[in-house]
Image 1 (tube, rainbow, N blue to C red):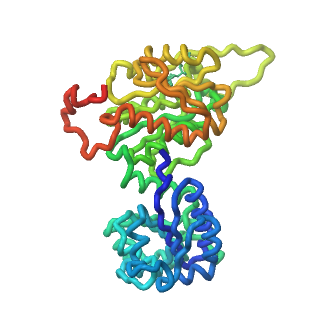
Image 2: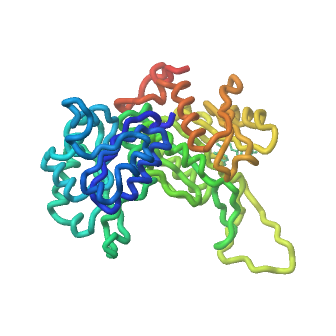
Image 3: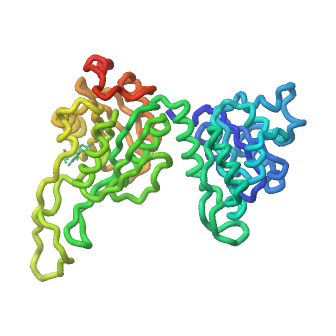
Length: 419
Ligand code: CTP
């Protein structure tokens, strides 16, 4: 499930030049399926027009508190209906007004009246951000449970460089998704470990053996589990992807490092999504210096790496999902790995049509055979559907857990009620 689908998000836009970025944010959230109600301060309307937002969200845009909804409760109605209030950009003035509990704009009355989570993305000049008044106000909002992001460093509208920039649109969407997950997610309190990308096995200081895995699917899985409120650790091989917001990322290079990183976090995990394309072999010897060219050929001796999943075969915890990217005999090869590695589920896909590609078709296989086929779709959607399947199949093991099990752990019957 896409956590933004059908969610009512109120986007408060205040008077900063960064308003132009809020337009793109409103568009992106709308495209992701959210119902975005924009409220602008009068100052914000001097930078961009309500019409611009309305054209992107296809919904009314509110600015004047006295000229909006007809009912007497107009000034609090949007806040009551909202599932999240995002104020981006938030000026020093609006932050101060929020901290003082003022109520003379529609954004302020909405913030006072809502019980939904509030995410604030400040944008201002560095000195305004650093001013003790602003810092005190931000601390007050945080103490009340609002999520106030740190602005980013970079070039500001004044031409100066410093902290004060509105974070990028993708980061804002990620922060909103993580917040929605923490509040409404179906895996709150669960710990998920995801491995992603390939590994690099060094030959000498400049060469390695690697594979074509891009990490896209593993990163999408980490984001999908985060969107459901899980605490996610992503163990990533060398990939060129930005870390998903709200996910702990452990970067590794070799199969051995991936194994070591996994061993550090696996004991606490409820779910392992072993998506990495781990090297099966590594050079038997790592040369200290770059190997020089010679007229002779070069035979490289390889030795097997540890099969990380197989080393966990005897463990019943966590729930283990393996991945099999094959170029032939997809189903039989996947079934064989399911059994050999003692997995709860294996996810098979055709390597040729999916490695490095934005879309993928997945076949979910359990001991009883093919459990479900997820048709070819963007990897982010495939990841969400896989998480949906896991939650449907193992609700007691993966569904939201209010408290961690006691030190001794639950009894076997309590531990696996889904089976
Ligand atoms: N895997 C692992 N450790 C390895 C190799 C693979 O944990 N050293 C995991 C992968 O992350 C994946 C599953 O095992 O979840 C299947 O990986 P795959 O490479 O398809 O299987 P192999 O056992 O390596 O078999 P083959 O290469 O012969 O297909």
